[in-house]
Amino acid sequence: MPVTNYLDLLTFDKFIRMNDIKDTFNQPFTRRAFVGAAASLILLPTVQSNAEIHKTNALTVQQVIDIILKNIPVPPIPKTTDTIKAGSPDQIVTGIVTTMFTTIPVIRKAIALKANFIIAHEPTFYNHFDETAWLENDKVWQFKNELLKKNGIAVWRFHDYWHSLEPDGVLMGVLTALGWENYYHTDKPSVITIPTAPLQDIVKRCKEKLGIKHLRVIGDLSQSCTRIGLIPGAAGGRTQMQLLQSEAPDVLLVGESPEWETIEYMRDAQEAKTKQALIVLGHSVSEEPGMNYLVPWLQPKVSGITVTHVPSQDPFQWL
Amino acid sequence: MPVTNYLDLLTFDKFIRMNDIKDTFNQPFTRRAFVGAAASLILLPTVQSNAEIHKTNALTVQQVIDIILKNIPVPPIPKTTDTIKAGSPDQIVTGIVTTMFTTIPVIRKAIALKANFIIAHEPTFYNHFDETAWLENDKVWQFKNELLKKNGIAVWRFHDYWHSLEPDGVLMGVLTALGWENYYHTDKPSVITIPTAPLQDIVKRCKEKLGIKHLRVIGDLSQSCTRIGLIPGAAGGRTQMQLLQSEAPDVLLVGESPEWETIEYMRDAQEAKTKQALIVLGHSVSEEPGMNYLVPWLQPKVSGITVTHVPSQDPFQWL
Image: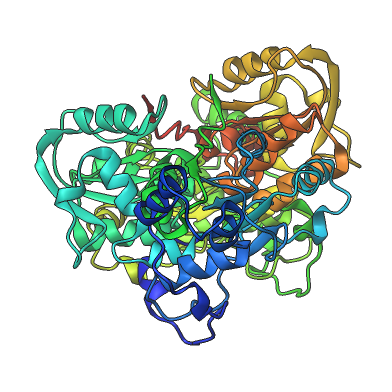
């Protein structure tokens, strides 16, 4: 289970850096500098040829990963899920697509964009650590694996480290999409205080601002909400319930939740009159703004490579 | 996670019977015999007084559990979840309520029915093994616990053993509710073959026969379905996907599913054209027929005690 437990990420018991950060990529490339250099090619002759600029800005998959990790000043995360799932660390990146799940439509869109590197927040192969031994004879895995191979697409998961940035990249993406970024506080990142609004307005805001067509709610829609708990993704029932206990938010927003845990707790909470509500947004759509938020963060660090967000969207037909 | 993995239940590595079965409860009580005895009290004088009949038919919580377990001829299940969650094993049972989740409305209904024993399929306290140490200062837990105590309600979970009966009690309840009980085969209990129908008809049948107002689907609604996979409840993504691999059902019905596992697998399966679909029914409503099915199975074994099913229903508002 992809436990997005922010506390856990801070209790490292090992300090083994997954990837050494190469000093050669410590040079400060910015998009502005690159655009300036490109413009100078048109306006006047320079000593730097087009090919040389390409070479200067050419980065491998591993080099892009190293640039990202260098910009997240946390100790190495042991047993991280953030590993390469497809492609080679040595391939030159032609373009980057950010997304929540590497779905087939996302892969096809990357191919159309001539982007050969997908940075996805969640697993590619249907389990937290992307184990594939059990999938070798599986037609779905074969289809996806071949599509990735045939088109030379690399996939890297960016989960643990993106969550461990301060502020958490996913959380800030979601807060920004909701128009609540100014309510963020470093000491209690998962709880914000907003001007009081009824639960039904919070639901409406989630649907409009996050582009969610269907969601599930437990609570009184007329109830006033000021303290909002935010745990996008699938943090697990215990983490969700402990936030409800310790921070007493009026409403908790989650991606998904085991129904025998948080869902039943919240059902009982209605009868116990704790005046707390729950909005289940759906896993994919709940964290998608965090991978959109990655674009402006990453783009200046990899000038010359276009970074595009392709949302993986809601997987369901709601009937 | 309440793993409803039928295979796991057959691979017992320990043989410690949770409760000894008392021979004194091996006597064949039937509802017919009890009704006959009760009627005789009205029609003619008998040597047996009302109090004596009550005494004869009086059973404690533990005795009811023992009767149930005696009727499920499987080796003891190690580390079973099927333990008493509230009340005393020694209290005399005044009535039995069966349900999926011991919600507050279910408890209130039991009180109204003067039934002091709830047999629930799923946890009472929001985690698989009903650990409560982390809940001691929790207002929701306190409210529920006090309501149960104040009204002398005992709760026993009946999960592992009900699933390990042949045929599986939950599965047969669901099949019967769907009108598909005649398609059951002992050798492959989780897959049935029905007359071909489009997926949209299967969805309609689930909604009508199981009383489900909202569900979520991945698949082509016009696709023909003949082989139906059934894993009600929350069996876990790997179990669900392995059934999709090994038995290749046209559609799989589940209670709930981790979205980064089975849901994304099925999303990719649509693009890989495996012609398989998924219906996510919701955990509570997916297994509820199994606890309704328990009533006619249990009633003849505890004559004199009324067994009533009280559904715990869908916890969500779908917005």
